Length: 133
Ligand SMILES: [Zn+2]
Ligand SMILES: [Zn+2]
Image 1 (cartoon, rainbow, N blue to C red):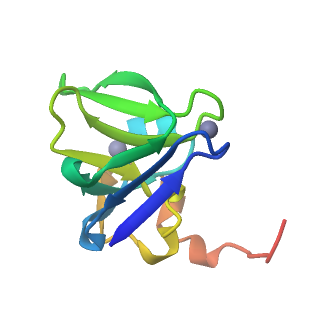
Image 2: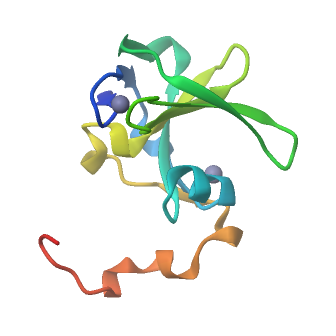
């Protein structure tokens, strides 16, 4: 699936080709803190297909408990997360699904790091719903 996305303020735009089977929801504590949410939904895009069409994201290098280091790219103006990737020669970019225009067609196919999932994230279907705020 060809996808395109942008940050909230629109300074950073990008496009890529993704396999919808590779969408995952990550419940690790790093994703919770870095996304400001209960979990983060991402999809892998092969590096050869990923293209920044406007702007240059700011990057933050995160060191995981394992010692593994990853680049996290985000808009320096609006703060929206754009992607994460390996430090050198990334084989793929992990795109943040919320920034993609096609996000409604990209439901997660797997959940990872469930051991640190916040318990209420498993069933939002039971929470009262309103069309708008
Ligand atoms: Zn922005
Ligand atoms: Zn994570």
